[in-house]
Image (cartoon, rainbow, N blue to C red; front, side, top):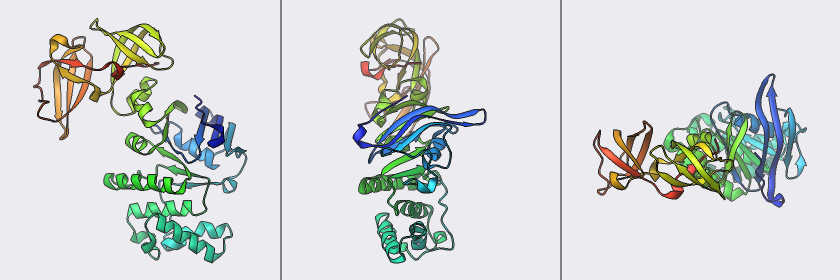
Length: 361
């Protein structure tokens, strides 16, 4: 899949990139265009190729075939130290015997910057990540979140054109991860540097990104904004991987201009939006749990029996087995107007036209 942006703003242009490790193809014919000043996320499960793609951009892995252009320059043949990119790793890799300030200065001094200039730039970066008062501490005297910010300051100090971030939040606990997400977004906006962020966490991707590329088995499944990825998945993998969804077997009878008429197993026909590549015939529709609502059975699109319900505080999760054996999950807000149904209750289900998405496969 190829997704292009305005050529005047392209930061990273990846063209038909393939990476093989012996007989194993880690990346297969990947093409992506990433815009200048974009927070772009590579999202997918373990082993999908996202980190290999990031390492290939960084120069730590050599492409088997294909091209990598950075602001119009082909960098595929350049060694890592000659590429105007920096990487923040999952493990911070800070020097334990150097102070926070010395850690941030280290890369600048290796580039030949005078000590006074390196110190001033390092202090600016520590101020940016709100650690100026910790400059004289050792890394072991910092929390995990603070160490991650030091690593970020060190990577930003040489002013790279592109910053690569390889699952940098995975070692942090949940609340700290959520706090650092906001800081990363703000830093990206403040610096104007293109960020390419790798994660397997769907929530991270949805909350932080301008656009997301979803990868599976070394190929790009879909590229789009978080809203488009979540609300308009192209195929079953994307629909299943991004959040929760319900998949229903349907028979598509008509398909035209991005709309489809689909027949449910109950015999009811509904109008759906259609993914690119969707076909007439047997297929699947995706409906997010929060798009379903309980209703009276006499006017319902679907009818089933409650098999499970879970109280989640702000929400209720209700499992319903349909008449034809299919199972659906419903999420609804926990309010006085939405009572929790009892087990084995027969309930009706409704959803709006735009809630049902006919998938390509």
